[in-house]
Amino acid sequence: MSSDRRRRTQQTRSTRQAASGGQRLTIGGITAAVIIVIVFIAQYVLGIDVLPEEEVPPPPVASEAPSGNVVPIDGGIDGGWFQVYFTAPINTQDESRFVGSPVENALIRAIDNARETIDAAMFELNSQLVTDALIAAHERGVTVRIVTDGEHGLESPETTVDQLEAAGIPVVSDGRRSGFMHNKFFVIDDLYVWTGSTNITHNGFYNNNNNSIMIRSTRLASNFSHEFDELFRGEFGTTSPGDVPYPSINVGGTQIVTIFESEGDLPAEIVRLINSARVVRFMAFSLTLDDLLQPMQTRVQAGRLEVQGIIEASQRRFLAPLFCADLDIRQDGNPDILHHKVFIINEDIVIMGSFNFSGSAATSNDENALIIYNQDIARAYLDEFERRWAEAVILPKTIFDC
Image (cartoon, rainbow, N blue to C red):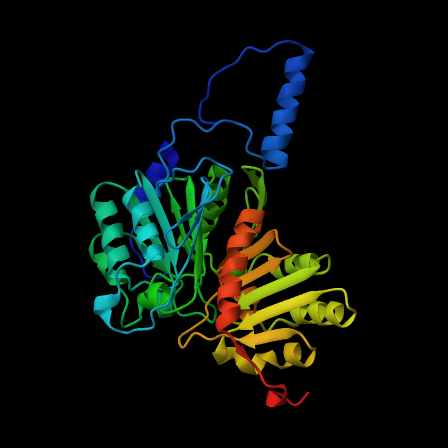
């Protein structure tokens, strides 16, 4: 961790409102100049990781798989530089059973392995195990900073954020504004990013259908650290600047696009992908954006696109435009909540994160999303889609007056 960042984090205080020096190389001649130009373009223009990353800590989640090989792990898959996790709802309010979630366990391992910094932006927090892990990290000298939602994170009757404050961890909330600080991401040691749809709560881990991914990349971590710093300064919603240090990066041959809302334009990116897709599958807590509905409807009716979608039952009233357009839509079968926010394009692109496909997510909330171009990751999300599709409810033709 740089001295500037250490000084900055040490000077922050709790509030509710609010390269390196490098080694010199002697390279002469035209060949060396060409190499330097190529590296500069790849590294800083295209965002491709071509420079070695040395002296970094081991992955917070231990992996026996070399980069490029995918192996199953408890709750998901391990690709070496990434791990993907899905919840397996047990649908209970019995607190004695709120142990053993592979997703919760993976996040705790990541926190436990942090060496220098943890920045966490959490919409909600009531997982006692995660709370304890954050406090333990703080007590062993890790710089921990928290951003949360004012209403659902700081003031919720079930929150454990107050325990973090009592332990001396600085906490910033977005107060009482119309939008939400809806993120659920962690940046660990400026190297690992954890993000997805999973709220850090009992329901998030044990009752709702959710997904999370952890990625090892300094450039992705730089993107999320940059966003976190804005939030920690109190720049929420549309007041947050729209700059992202590395909008598109390449990690292990995988392109990853980072978008933060409401200062970004994720709907436009999704439409671009829909307009060139053969097959679109989605799992959505909410899907109310006409910007997304119309392109799917138009291309399906023209015979150019196949769509399958699962919508959370409590949002069924918003299904009419999709259902009446003859899209293959089902209502989820979870007695609690289908909380995914996922689009799968063809068999090789995944759009995931905290972003509900709604107007408030696009115009007032603080959200994050990744567009990941990777067949193995897409396959994992397709497998989750198939599990949810199998338990989903087929709606009768008479349910809407089309």
